[in-house]
Image (cartoon, rainbow, N blue to C red; front, side, top):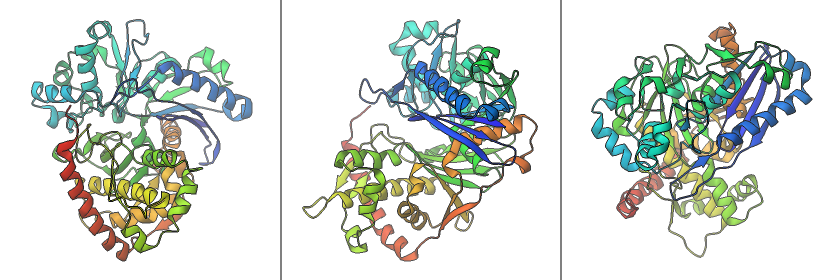
Length: 489
């Protein structure tokens, strides 16, 4: 039995997986984000730990036999966050999250200070990454920076509580801008550009390797056997890829979570920072991946649901399904940049926009515009990956938005690629984390990293693709027209 723990932005998820690939149990604990100033996004690590204790205590009460049989724990989590700790492992300030946009100026400073950044890290300096966040702290909270003895990513702070060890894995570390991604090791040059050293970084392991052992008192508290191994785990997207079996070159997925992601596995480091595309280590040894990221995907649907006072996202999508093709063509356009944007614009100051509103437009038209706008953002990211026609035949679709057949079909037609949802695909990073624990316990990739059975298949619709192409051209022109009007960093 293996336990996966996935520290997301809005929920901490738990999953128990047995050696026949059966998901025995899942549970989750909600999390909230604090935004004390414009562009800021923070969470209190103590809230993560309280949620972890509640979730595992519930599993201990509801699944005592399964918990006692756990042989390994895997961790997955939101990437790029900065948890600053002192020499006694005490947290110095709230964690600065992946979707925090305060460090735009520091990105420019980092690029100027480190000419080798792109070649080593394989990515542009963006406010979402960890390194610019530390430059911001150094500039604006110098007393805390001086006391910083270590910087941990969110899931790795949970690992510290679980094992007492400061450890990270390659896939999550690749999102800091401190990793030499090709060589899979910390870069002294990149660290020095931020005023840090390797001594302040966690030890690195592969995601499928052991990283430590669960503390005895915690094993007793949660009904686990003594000596449970904790594997390296992975960043949320790399772990999700392990969960849906995207572990070989050319395999990948589209994620419609809080953020939107297109992920492709590669056998080598393939950076293309000019397109604001990410090139990271995968959670498995000798494997890398390319990734486009937009900062607001399913979050956009949640936002418009709240704005309109709809009962739920699914109820709102039911209204969208009543629109005719002609009504969709007359719907407003929506720029989905509610939290700024990464790929391909690298613009933390980008903002959302409805364009073309008239008296005829109601909730269904607005909701359609939002899911279409998210689709256009993903299409821009797809183009940034430089995939040639026919190179990728199908992609898995994961995340909360994958529950909507309407949205899935829209995306398949936009991308021109068949999308498949998979049984258990909603488990995402938690399933991948459990599988990484299984690998850390001696499992093989062929045995562990199976693609779950296909639940639904969505083939591109040529007529819809043609209609959407015209609207996407207007969408692109709209961004170019309003981009100069966005606030400056």
